[in-house]
Amino acid sequence: MTPDILCIGSVLWDIIGRTPAHMEAGADVPGRISRLPGGVAMNIAMTLARFGMRPAVLTAIGRDAEGEELIAASAGVGVDCTFAYRSDDLPTDRYMAIEGGNGLIAAIADAHSLERAGDKILVPLGDGRLGGPGLPWAGPIALDGNLTIGLLSEIAASPLFAAADLRIAPASPGKAERLLPILPMANATIYVNLEEAGLLCQRRFHSAPEAAEGLLSRGARRVLVTNGGKPAADGASGEGVISAPPRPVLVTRVTGAGDTFMAAHLVAERRGAARADALGAALEAAALYVSGDIRS
Image (cartoon, rainbow, N blue to C red; front, side, top):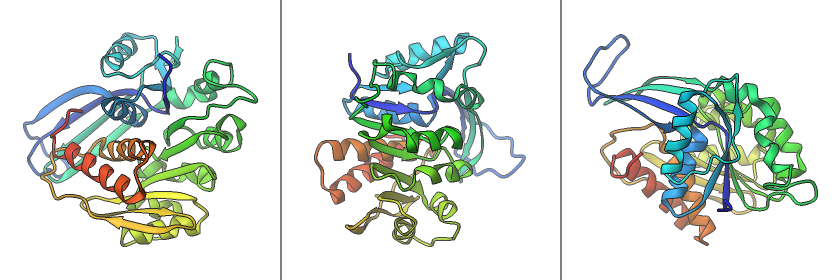
């Protein structure tokens, strides 16, 4: 089936250790360890599939055993890997995290294969399968900051992305500044948390509305800023900033929450929801996710 949205970026195995105990450096506690399809692009795609969309991923996946397992698992959750770049010499990427009762303790993202693949992952957008010169992809694209700053700079200038509804998220605070080249794109909506907004603006913000104002002043056209259990904000150039609080829930997991927020917001807007309603729908989806009331 033809996809109705493209998710570009990291698709890998998430290896997550979770425990309800509060943890400090060096802690050794009982818990559960899971291995699930993950990565920013995959997390967004899986949420989109749950909402009834047909997502395809543009990414790099190795031809190793882990890659074959990942493609099979992705198909099982409604994510199309047909257009993924398959490498004979690059291994399938992985992400490892430890989560305690006091939140994310530590994480390591091994997305080196995606970075080394570079613009090979974008070939389907120009060879006629998903678009080409003079006929660019005109649907939504979810783009993640695991791509290199060089590739993100190419995307910002590429006519292959000029007609898309671009939805963009950093992979982590450590990679937030990679988004600077695409911040002012007229067709881009940027999704960040409070820390990432501060890194992009090189200043400290105390609230999501303040951060949204700061990003708009830096040239962004549309931004969504989350702040954990505190109010989130939606800022649009020429339309101002709106804000809403998330529903209080017992947090049982955090990895993937921002990706769920982004996917739910995108779906709500594609269905015609007004800004306030779309923000509310995204906050509710994220609350359900972090509370464990929906599957990963």
